[in-house]
Image (cartoon, rainbow over all chains, first blue to last red; front, side):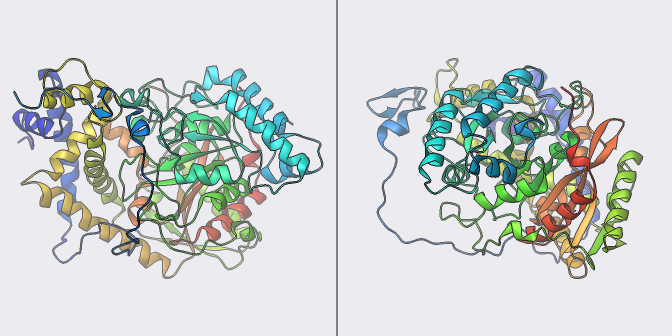
Length: 96
Length: 485
């Protein structure tokens, strides 16, 4: 039984904001199925009473003083913009 | 012997006695690059004009007797996922082909304070995803020991450029072995520091809970110099640890008497080539001869590290790489009429195959209905892997094994099946999951290709790693071998 279907791959691609062709979806289905199948070996381990590790260092709530500091200028922020107008990022239509 | 074969301490002596100028060093560096980089293809961007100006400025400093930084006048190559103000930074991805950062990464700032010269930016697997440099969006880098072989990855060019004598040293980044595996393949010294020792501010994020920047050098002493310059807390990176930074150069006592070495049986088991095992056993005998003792131990969850790593790193990557949307920087596709299509087209045109595959895997593992089964499960197994290391380090000072199961391989020989390529990192990945530091040092050859010895230490105990690596280096001459180019 396959672990992931082509339709699921297309759905995940949409969530990931990737455009995939039919051929790409097919290849990805096959490859992801294999990788996920490999990952399922983790199920051999009983982890019911194991805490998850999100981070290896014991750091908690790293805070800094809420002070006003210089930030990036508009010119700098726009330096790498693919498209801009009047110091703002320009994007295609959002509303139809 | 070329001036580029000398150690930092030797070059500093020559600068001090005025037998050499910084301009001489920079000239020799670019001569070498122009001579061999057509074959090695390590650099994506050269910073030649600036480097020559900076060399002159430093020479003036030399004459005036002004204070000199720790790495005064030393030429360095920087992996192209570390941002450099005004110098193109691509992550070897088409999506960032023309990206010019507006700030320096903290490590780059610290290097500038140490008076290094940024010679250029080094090729890599796109967004640090890969083990051969063949995933670069521009061109592959070649192994200086055999140009038909890969240099490893993802910091393949960081290792190849140092091995080829193009730069004295370089910075790489290591998420699952990306400094150590190429260092092993190219016969150089590469350290992945403890997670949190070196600031990640300005390192383009791949998997934030695993990424670490680290030094790649031709010998252990230079490695310690470079780490000394970049280590230490940074308020700009909230995961940066607040620890005292020791004097790493003080660790070169040459003394390993009484050192307790653990050798995991899982690191010398099935899948590890005989040529690799032999070199590691030789290395253990050498350390034994110097007064260390070793015992076989077990890291029982090692075999689950690879799957754990691919689930966690891909999940984190899928979130981190969502910033590349074609709006604020990077490539934007012209082939779209609305915003969602623009996102999709820009990302699909800009990212390479492996990057897309990992974004897909990560998005799947984090998606509704699968999160607990894959992502959370992997986080729990990560705890078990981390505990394996904690248990061993209660009784032993270091863990030693090979860096990789085999020596370098032919370009194109592993690109068909992603899983086969992933196996390269099977001995380096557990270290990232546990957050501990580890170095790869040259320990000989197998069929003419270099082999790396991996020395793993306790959290924030880089000093012991350096002490052992240096003692081993002094007892052997592997690090003096150079590729013929």
